[in-house]
Length: 191
Image (cartoon, rainbow, N blue to C red):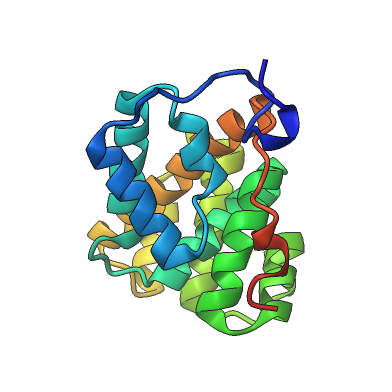
């Protein structure tokens, strides 16, 4: 049994040993760029196919070309994680919002209640849609998508909002279910 303090989750899932060369290189890039290997990646190391599927989806949604800025995608992650009370994602993506916005107060307000933030109509509509996806996706109607179009979003942007919100609804539930622990460095980053 591994020391629980060193584990990224409450589950005892030892990493594949040895890690494939491609995985070692990916983790080295994370360490170089971020100064750490996020625990969400460490948590997946017991199954390299799951890790690769997770990172491919995450990188596509959060880093690929989009009509949504990286900050807007991180804002969606924080709002969805706030609604779901996902400790890991609030801490990790709260740090990303602090970094991208340069505004720790904004990030904290977004994490507690996005409605108290000063937001333009576009971003408010985006976050209201993400909230609706999280709380009652089965009730979304054409009028909800029309409101996003009126706020300036294209149909492709609407797809991206829905995809980011859907992804974080899934990952929030997994992170909470396995008691995923945020890297300690996230707590003080960009404050």
